Image (cartoon, rainbow, N blue to C red; front, side, top):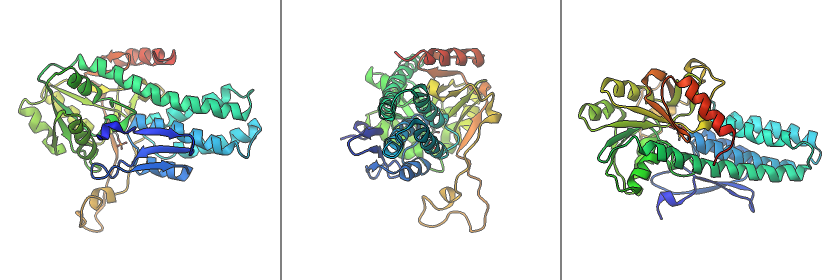
Length: 360
Ligand code: MRU
C-alpha cells in the first residue's frame, strides 16, 4: 500500500473521531491517529501531525463537527448550544494563525449553525456533519481542477521545482502545487521534479519527495540552498508552490523560503506559479503586510532533527514558519477556476465570486 492510498483527513463518525496520518513520523512510519478529544485535535494541528492549508481546513471542519456532537449531549436549546459551539470554534481557530483555511472552514461551519437557528440542535449537528464532509469532497474537486489548469502550463520534458509540501498530504487528494505534476504523469508526460528539503521541518524532503516518488514521478530532493543552482543549470522550466493565504493584491504567504525561490526564479526568468484554491484567497487582507506570520519554537531549528544540538546554547533563534512573497514575483495563481494573471486584484475577486456560487 502506498502513502497515496491513505486519506489525509477523514471522519470516523461511529467512533466520533478525526482520522489523520501522523505526518511528523513520515516517511519512516505510517501511523494512523483517531482523535476524539478537542485538545488532541488542536495539538495535532499545532504540532503539524496534520498540516498544509487545505488539510488544516478539512481537519477543522471535522473537528468542530465532533465538538458539536459532544456539545449537543448537554445543550439542547440553541443559545446554550451556540455559546459552547463558539468557544470550541475559537479554540480550534487559535491553533495556527497563517493558513486562512483554518478560520475559513470554521466560519463556514459557523454559518451553517447561524443559518439554521430555527431547527433543532440535533438537526443542526446533522447539517454540520454534511458540511464537514462537503469541505473534504470539495477539496478533492478543487485540487483536481487546479491540476487540470496547471498541467497546461507544463511541457513534456520540463523540469519543475517545488517548495514545502503542497501535495496530497496537504490536501484531501492530489495536492495543489503537485496536482499538475500528478496529472502530467497520468498523461504520460516526462517531468522531473526538484523538491526543496524545506528547512527547518523538512516537509519537502520528508513528504513531497516521498509522495512523488511513491507515485513513480522522477523527483530529486535538494537542499533549499541548491535551488538557485538547479535553476542556473537550466534544469527548471517552471516553479509551482502552494500558499497559506493570498492577500487581495496578490501578495501571498507560504512556507518560509518561498520568497527566496521566487526571487531566484525571477533572476533566471523562470515562471513562478502559485497553486491557490479559492479557500486560501483572503480578500479581507489587503496586502502581505497584514498577514500574521506564525513564529515557532527555536528547538525546531536547533535540536529537533539532530542527535546533538546544532546551535550553541544561549544563541537566539528566529524561526518564522512562513514568509510573504510580493505579487510582482508571481507569474500566475492557478485556481480551480483558471489561472489568474496580473493585475491580480480583479482576477482574484472574480474567482472568489465564482466559488461563492458553489462548486461543480
Ligand atoms: O507548516 P505547514 O507544513 O502547514 O506549511 C505548509 C505550506 O506552507 C504549504 O505550502 C501550504 O500550506 C499549501 S498546502 C496545499
